[in-house]
Amino acid sequence: MNVLLTGGCGYIGSHVAVVLMAAGHHVAIVDNLSNSHQGVVDRISEIAGRSPAFHRGDVADVKLVRDVIREHSVDSVIHLAGFKSVGESVQWPLKYYQNNVCGALGLLEAMEAESVAHLVFSSSATIYGDPRYLPVDESHPQHVINAYGRSKLHIEDMLRDVCVSRPSLGAVCLRYFNPVGAHSSGLIGDRPRGIPNNLMPYVVQVASGELERLKVFGDDYPTPDGTGVRDYIHVMDLAEGHVAALDYLSSNSGWHAFNLGTGRGYSVLEMIRAFEAQSGRSIPFEITGRRQGDVACSYADIRSAAQGLNWRATRSLEDMCASAWGFQSRLAGG
Ligand code: WQD
Image (cartoon, rainbow, N blue to C red; front, top):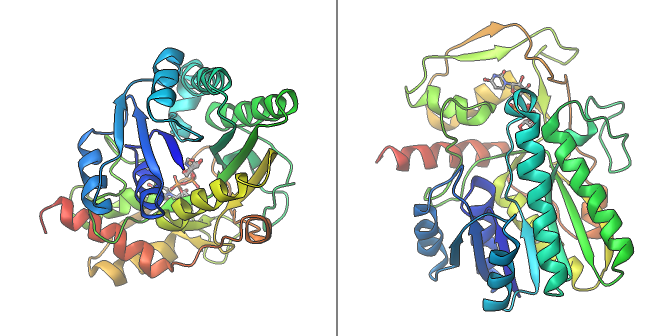
């Protein structure tokens, strides 16, 4: 297939690009590089053995997107472009609605104008809020508590409406749990700008000595060791889930949503120990107060994705930690 991949220079996007190209798809990336670097296109090319097309620009630019669709005879879109910091979204909600929701609106307009009928959308388990039951399945109540999660939910709901008005359209919303790790080459990985918000990139930078110690946000949660539990999923498993979703759309129209997780959770302390074992580095940490908005425990019910997409995560926690460290080591010239 000829796939338009928005946000393809980002952490998730670069791994999706590599897996798409390995599966024989042609990839055209549109990315405004607001949270990524164009050099990632070269890394993707190095891994894939051929180059994706790259167009710098914003998905809200309907004319640009339509030109790219026509130039590359695009038949499917994977939409990853968007801001993704929970904390930032609380501070600047309008920035998140403008960028994420209006960006998706522009993309949908371009797709409609060019009769593109397959869309895979990068959604998030954040839309579930604090789990009322576990594991979290796709029917779990949606209780968003920040503008980031609400922007994802607004886009999911827009897709529901467009699928009703355009019966030929197929849309799959992939609700990510906690992506971590990197491609085995160490050429691409998670390198956020500034101080990392998320656990794994922060741990990696403590291991490398860039940061002094990890703050563990609370050890008084109702979990086995008191620290937060999350469903960490290898980014390569996540990327493969996107190819499975594209295949699903070749024989299914309408609106669909699937959780992408492993079905089991690990605590912060378990992640620290696993990373120390794989990196051989000590991770000094201090226990601090809880972070506002954090939930105690979240992990996915994976049956729907297994049945619907014939997809499940296969990589281990050890793979996640070793590959994250491998990327950092290569970045540092190790
Ligand atoms: C994981 C655990 C923290 C940092 C967020 C978004 C979600 C998705 C993934 C985009 C928690 C603890 C963390 C630190 C810590 N992003 N922690 N010290 O909050 O589950 O999910 O990122 O789609 O939408 O909400 O991930 O990695 O920030 O936190 O103790 O310095 O690690 O309290 O228990 P989170 P996270």
